[in-house]
Length: 323
Ligand code: HEM
Ligand SMILES: *[C@@H]1O[C@H](CO)[C@@H](O)[C@H](O)[C@H]1NC(C)=O
Ligand SMILES: *[C@@H]1O[C@H](CO)[C@@H](O)[C@H](O)[C@H]1NC(C)=O
Image (tube, rainbow, N blue to C red; front, side, top):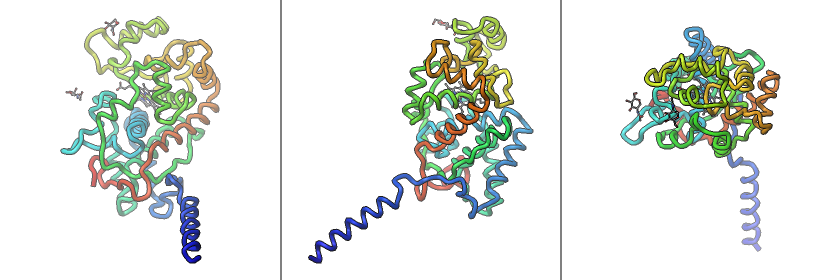
């Protein structure tokens, strides 16, 4: 009888535990409110200053968060330099000579650790906040969302994972769709998040084939790209991803309707054949409200990918190195 009671007691405890402890710890927008209420305003002011120095840096910070999240989750792994134990992500094909903003992340980290008097804000959270703030500074208050916080930093990084998990600009719609699906993101997320290309630049090497060889492109637009990007040489020449490169707006989508997407992967989202993706591009081109709503929701989803939380990982003291 006693053993029967003990057994049912144990079962009761186990059931209670599984009900109370969520299988995946949740992020919260108020994560730093008690431990360091200055954290978010300090990060915002460093981002604002950096964008005043150079408008493009907002785009670069947004992209860092994306490239962090798509490689083993949003864990700050993209920021790690190579070590004896691993080759980091910085020299992976999509990143090499391409991702930037590491110095601004260092500047944010120094300022926030100083304000908090100790290292409590993770590098992964810094990327999430800096991405949100960049978009809001360049696009206005309708793009502000409550950024969820409490991510922890990885103690490793992987160039191989970056090479295989980040989508290249040569991908077709179906390849983009399955890449996003592998990250738990759907076609709506794909089209909304590709709106990240409303700001920033791409190198000649990423759009040369489109400028010279593709047919699904406006011919005047292709001619102007060929001026910026010679057949040979000039690999690092830059072109703007949309016509209003320092403003988050819906020009990116209206350009796709006119076959003026810069990257092959951009134009794949609109081919005028009535696909779900076509419909979303049309919707966002006419409605900045719909774009803002969906972009914010998808950024939150992307920011939740495969997190380290609680006591997993660490909070780095230097974003470039594990503690
Ligand atoms: C859908 C698949 C995507 C592909 C194939 C792709 C590809 C690219 C490529 C090739 C560049 C130019 C890189 C260079 O020449 O150095 C670029 C730039 C950029 N991407 Fe994406 N991207 C994708 C999705 C995204 C997403 C989801 C975001 C953010 C939400 C994003 C944000 C950016 C930004 C802001 C830039 C400009 C960065 C700068 O000027 O420093 N991209 N992307
Ligand atoms: C990265 O770019 C540098 C400079 O262009 C080049 O020397 C190096 O081989 C590249 N690394 C990889 C892994 O492609
Ligand atoms: C155009 O396509 C051909 C055949 O695929 C390829 O050999 C060539 O390098 C491409 N040209 C450019 C400028 O990318």
